[in-house]
Amino acid sequence: MSKIINPRDKKADNTLDISSPLQRRSFIKYAGAGAALSALILSGCNDDDDGKFNGVVYQPPTPPPNPNEIPAVNLGSGDTGILNYAYALEQLEAAFYDMLVKSTTFNTTFTNATERAVLTDIRDHEVAHRDFFKSVLGNAAIPALTPDFSLVNMADRNVVLMAARTFEDVGVAAYNGAGKLLTMATNLALAGKIVSVEARHAAEIREMLKQNTFAARGGASPKPGDENIINDKGLDLALMPNEVLALAKPFIKNDINASSLPTS
Amino acid sequence: MNIFNIFSEIEKVDPEVYERFDSRRQVFKHMSGFGKKLAAAAVPVAFGAVFNKAYGQTSNNADIIAILNFALTAELTDSTYYSKVLDANSPNLPAEFKTGLTIIRDNELGHVETLKKAIQDLGGTPVVIAESRLDYTAGGKINDPFADYPTILALGQAFEDTGIRAYKGQAPKPAIMANDAILQTALQIHSAEARHAAYFRRLRGDGQNLENNKPWITLKDRGNLPEFTQPIYDGEETTTQATVNIANLVSANAASEAFDEPLEMPQVIAILNNFFKEGEKLPG
Image 1 (tube, chains in turn cyan, yellow):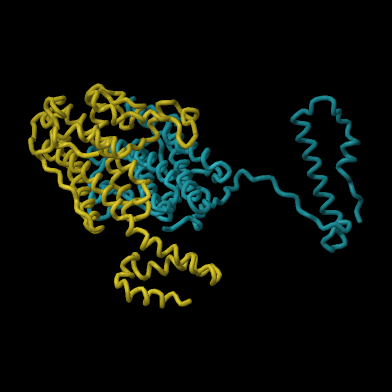
Image 2 (image 1 turned 135 degrees about the horizontal axis):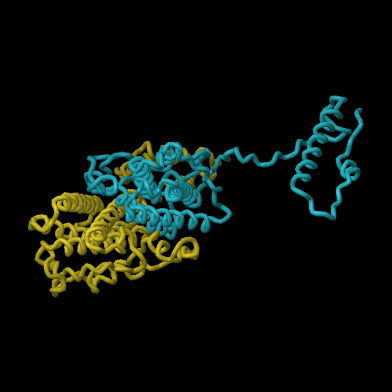
């Protein structure tokens, strides 16, 4: 068996003065040395090849969370699952508008001050929705998602408004389709308070893009992304969670598991 | 127990048993969700849930019909107004607005037909509102409701903002929540009304130096509408939702704009009654 070097002994050998503040650089150097020593111990000691180290089963240390690893997210079940589903969509919308209004090209992409004010208002509304859901869900809330808007050129007015149009129309359709999946009247009432504001956004974004498309009629069954979004009975879109999440997938890095959501 | 036998037995006394469910296949889709996974002893419980969804609704039909007739009353009040404006064909109206108003009027007529059919399918009788009962001058408070462009935009905003609050108040009622198809249709109408409202509000904000009249409702600001319309906006200033103080998250203005508020049936009827003649007003 190789000689065991205990990092604690090493620390004692070091002329580190614990009474003086630990300099950042020296701490990193020290921690690095410790890690290297640990590796040396582990590689050098397990000669007997019995899976044990001095008779103790080796337990690999829990790796620190990797910031590049995007966790999968399970929305959960029942009303909580539906509220988490809404929370996921509001996170996406809030992140989109926040990125837009903070982008360095916002003033040059949207030269009209009223349009900038409208988009800033919408950002604030979506932040309010997002933070509201986070607050009411409490411990049951899904974590913060990692959005991906690399498909959207924030410096192209038309591209931005087309993306916003889809987010708003799909947001409306999501609430319209999920209402029947809720069991508590208070939750449906809250969803109702939000969905009409999303529909106001959708109409405004559509008018910024093209006049008189706010509620233009598109036959028996218009689809998300269509210019004419209202059906020939005057009804807005309604979509189920699996349809909505498929549309949202290109904009969210996390895998979202909706398998426990109610389906009727 | 043999669940297939149960359907056969029920069919002897209720030949329409299968139609009470979305379809025969749909029932077994529901069953597979929980029946398969449950112990045999628990199956009757799950089975009962399926039956409640089909049979529990019949006792609520009278309540649903009353709510749908209330919605139909509001839709008829709006759609009759828009049709009269379009028929007047005033030269004061920009051509692109006539196009937009035609979209809105057609959507409202779609809502009227959808509601009528739903009421009839439930065994009810759709209300009829005779045009002679209506008065779009609101008892002389509005001068030129069919030809003056700013007045038409203002009335359109008032009707649509009211309609949104009316549907929002009724959707969570037990009778509506018990019927998935009716609830979803009501929500699909509700968000279309919100699109209409945003359109009228945008045209007023952009074209009439009413920059504070945004597509969304700020606090309880009625945006220069006549004073009698204030009940359409009272309560919209709320900034606390389910005990969460939204004004701690964003500005108070944004907190009020981000959530639209419901109105109960009597409040909506009182607003609509501004447009019904004396002696012809809606009860309630």
